[in-house]
Length: 511
Image 1 (cartoon, one colour):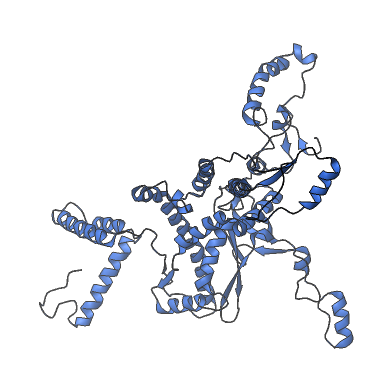
Image 2 (cartoon, rainbow, N blue to C red):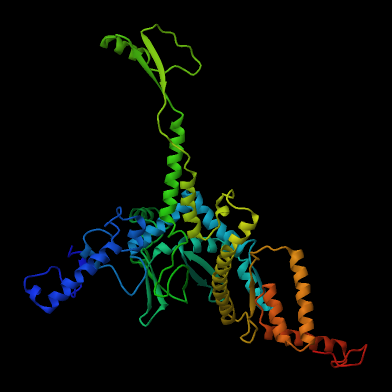
């Protein structure tokens, strides 16, 4: 025990004879019921079964006596909320295994990607030169962003974090990105005074590169050709530190502010995914053997020699539909196993509901729509849609960070002027598909009501525009939009050639 844990100095191990007559001893005696109560509440082995998988991942070890709770593991950091590296790698591998082997886990991740990314995203810049630079990066075969965006969203949900590495051509500013497997990042060094500001990331050593020849191959190459030997890089043997922001950027989900690593969408569901899969496997086995039977043959008054002979004769069971002929000394009967496997649909549904609520998905999203109608399904889908919209904000921040780096390198290489307007929009597909006829009718009534309110002097133009865009579900800066309207009005006035006057009416054009 002392080799794995350290004991706080304020907690006495046992009550001695001297402590019985001291004030400190009296305090400890008075605190004994409190310690027992804490033990009953925090140690699930007091009244329940052994620790579950969740306890080993996210809680303290629930084994041992009541005093074990006050011991601290040497691997713990009370100021950090990340699991220890071995637990993180175990979670990482199990999430990947569940994604490939568990249909329910695969559906949870893929549904998220389908809703968040839809048919893809669109990049729209104000300046044509900026648009050209962004499209060159977007359609670069080395980046293939049309499909990589789906990989970014899928792996972000699967691993809980993404590490994007930048490779920049110093001559033309061309940017190429690559995704680093989060399991390869074993250390994250942050600002001592700000844990949310990473300074550099350490990629664990992965051994000699497969593309580099071994020592034996190098010696053979030297004997057969004049090529010099290729030395194994130090990064492959000792790992490599990558500077945050310049070489690698990190994006995380499902974490608190004092944690460095993100958490997969499947991390909390892993124990229940396994239990549901085990339950289904048991049901398959029960249903398989429920219809199985065996032949019981009874021989009247037979000795051992007769029984052994009959065993050899009936070593193979009769084929279905065959005829069995015997005398009155033999009795044949078919015996089926008494499994008593009653209907257990509610047990499976309870397990699936536990998974559904953890994934924030309605039950009918997980291939079971028999317990809800259309109205119920529509109401239950709102939290899920809000979850997907929140994930779109994360993906927008990720793509914006990448595209800002592309524009920065283009300006540094001289492809863009420093004064160019770098503003651009990242347009995601709409998640909630509403009835367009109903929406159009509602918009018409809203515009009519806002026009009346404006005529009565109840609202300003700015407030009316904000209400209109808010109802339409679009995030548009009202002041910026008013500036665009005024700019278009000025341009149309100059095109008329009248200095802001309409040639038809000869009056100034309203702004």
